[in-house]
Length: 342
Image (tube, rainbow, N blue to C red; front, side):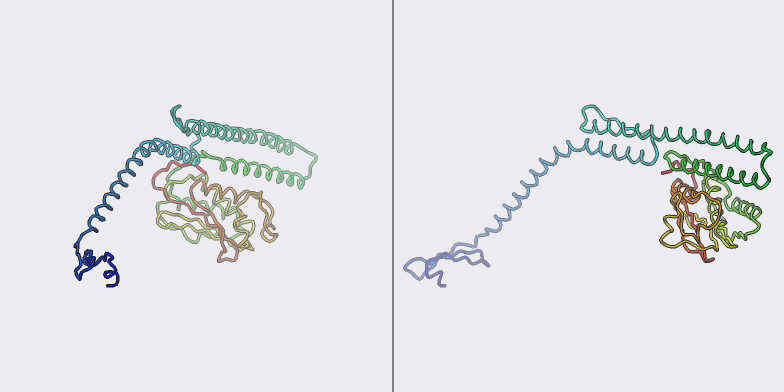
């Protein structure tokens, strides 16, 4: 009322009405109701529509300009993934006017250099295989022909030569597995039957130890490279033979689409903080786990490389026998997949 007496315009918000006292009278001038919020609402819709139109007008040309760049970036990503998966012949080519042309050339040069390095490494490995084996064969032949050695000396030298040959073979195997494009020679064998026969052969050769096949789950173990699977089983069992006291336990299980091979021993075991390092090449652990003769420190490293080649994994844990338990697991493929080692 004070504002009204003073001659001010008063707005009645709840009625959208404006009133003002007429000077020198007891009357007021009333205007309304005026639905001004309706016009405000209409203005807001207009502003939003205008902003949306401007945004679309700007975004559409940007989308048209970015779309080919995005497609070329996806091509680079795909090529890099395939190259990283071992497809060393993967290359990428862009039009000379493309913004990614120089990047494509750099990628191809990098791929060519890596391919050349891997080819050089393969050639070196093949050369080593020939150059080292030949003198060892000659040395063994001359040793057999020598008449100046006693029986004990001859046996000791033969044992040393055998260890050298085993070391060379392990080094070559590890080097071959530790490179891309190491294609697996896959077949579909009766794996449970094979492992039973192979464990029986191992027991026959090592009668001083108790090697038990405790559990073999029947089933379809899919496509396997039996050359590599034999190496896995032999390396794990040989490792257990070196460190076990008396008993070695082997099991094979199949759960859904994953198979697991376990080899346990009753030896000194491996400390938890050493169970990752044991898969590194030439790693020597504490004396209690390194007391046996033989071995070159590459057996478990080769098993680890084979696990990577098969998209599987291998780890060490404590065994119920008191020693170490090595678990080698891999995905079961019921069709022959096309993959290479990492």
